[in-house]
Image 1 (cartoon, protein in one colour):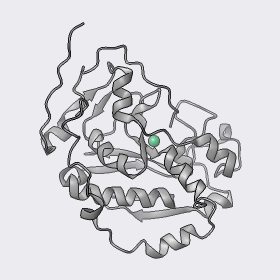
Image 2 (image 1 turned 135 degrees about the vertical axis):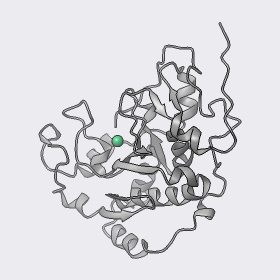
Image 3 (image 1 turned 45 degrees about the horizontal axis):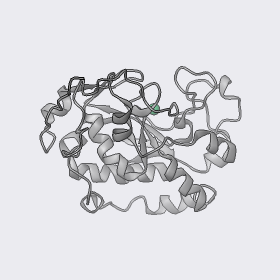
Length: 262
Ligand SMILES: [Zn+2]
């Protein structure tokens, strides 16, 4: 078996490498998926649906793209047009709060890349792409799709914009999961992870009818990006074997651990 060599990355991401290089993940072995995406687990969509229902009362098979929010439980928990730094989003207030904090840290650790961040949307009541019946985590306003320098890495595309690895290097510290680990790779997609959702449920935050109002009162307060960035590497950890993995780093058939679709 031939050994593979890992391409050395600079300690600090440069604009040129972030915007021009891409990584081919089609040959990754299961261990590499685990190492890069784990130990975070996907958002527990089925549990949220069971506990609190869906944001639109129709059957998901009948949802149009961007169906209206017509269930009061969720309507009372969504916030709209919130400035999170590089753009505005709408979503579940707790998810928007974590995103705002993550991006404040991002502005300090990776300012060049931060200025190139854009979004394809957060709150969107729709099914998973390619499925007529499975609700997407975007319907709960707990997932966001990123663009970098106006470029999208579409669902199913296994040549991933390198900048998304650096987005993950920050967001993994703020309670997110990366859609790169889904059975059908969705590298632009980041969602609140299982551990975070279970904590919200356990602490009563999801059930709290006043959580959104309390947060809206404090949303105007500026965040200390430098403080939030403490302990977060300014680039993908250079000591990790996946730093980020170079094209062709894996030698297997590209199988990966089971996950959910976003
Ligand atoms: Zn998405």
